[in-house]
Amino acid sequence: MKRKPGDVKVFVSSVLPSIGIDMLRKENFNVTTWNDNNPIPQDKLIENAKLCNALFCTLTAKIDAGFLNECKHLEIISQFGVGYDNINIPEATKLGIPVGNTPGVLTDATADIAFGLMIAASRKMFFMHKKIEKGEWKHFAPTSHLGMELKNKTLGIFGLGRIGIEMAKRCKGAYNMNVIYYNRKQNIEAEKLLGAKYVPFHELLAQSDVLSVHSVLSEETKGIFNKAAFEKMKPTSVFINTSRGGVHNEEDLLQALNEGKIWGAGLDVTDPEPMHKDNPLLNMENVAVLPHIGSATIEARNGMSRLAAENIIEFYKNGLIPNFVNPEVMKK
Image (cartoon, rainbow, N blue to C red; front, side, top):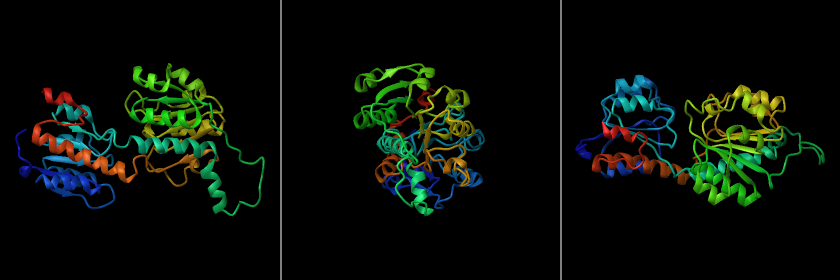
C-alpha cells in the first residue's frame, strides 16, 4: 500500500478519546468523525465508510457481511477494542480487508473489574447498597445477608490470556487462591508464573469456587456457560464474566441462581446489551452487574485510541499492522 497519508480518508465511527484522532491528523490523514454519543445507524455507517479508505470503529459498529460487501473498497479496519465479534472476520479476510485491534492496554483495567465483581458478589455489596437507598438499613442484624470469604478458595479461569493472568495474580496475591484454568491449549508460562493447573472444562466447572471468564466470543465459546454447565458447578460457586455476554446463556444463569445451582454472579457483560432495567438479575442478593465498563479508565481508553491509530498509521507508512487480527490477508 503506497497511498500517502495525505491522500487517505479515515472515518471514525464513534466518539472516542482524541489522542488517536490527533495522532492521525498530525500524520496528515484526512479524518472525519461521527460526533453523536449514540451508536451510528447502519445506513450512516455505510454512507460515511463509502467515502473513506480506512475505518476506525468500535464494538457498536456492525461490520457484518452486508456492510463489508457494500464497503469492500476499504483498505483497513482498525477496531477500538481487543474484542472484534462485531466484525465478520472471515468475510473481511475473503475480501482482502485487513483488521487490527488494541490488545494489552486494557488488561489491568478489565482484570480490576473482574476482581471487584468477585468481591462485590461474594459480599452482596450492590444489594446491600440498595437497602440503604430504600431506607431498609434499620439496625445491626448478625445473621442477615451474610456473604462468603475468598481466602484459600479455588479460582477457575476460562481463557488464561493477558486478562486472565492478571485476574489470577490479583486473586493469588490478595487471597492465596489456588488457580486452575481451561484453554484451547496449555499456557506453560502462566503455569510457571502462577502455579496454575490446566484442567478439562468439566473439571473447571466442578472444582472452581470462583469461575472467571476471559475468553473471546466465538462459535466455540458462544453459550458455553449454559444450564448443563451451571449444573456441574458447586452450589457455593460464584460466576464472573467480563468477556462477552454471549459466552453465557442469561436465562440459564438466572435459573441456576434461583435454584441454588450456583451461589452468585458478577457480570460486566450481558446478553443482550444493554440489559433492560427490569432484568431480575439486577435485584438478586448475590449478583453484581456493571454496564460493560471493563476498559473504562482514562489510561486504558487513551491506550486503545492510540493503538487503533497506530494500526492505521503503520499500515500506510510501512505496510504493517502492529496488532493484526487477520494477518493471512497480507498473503493474498
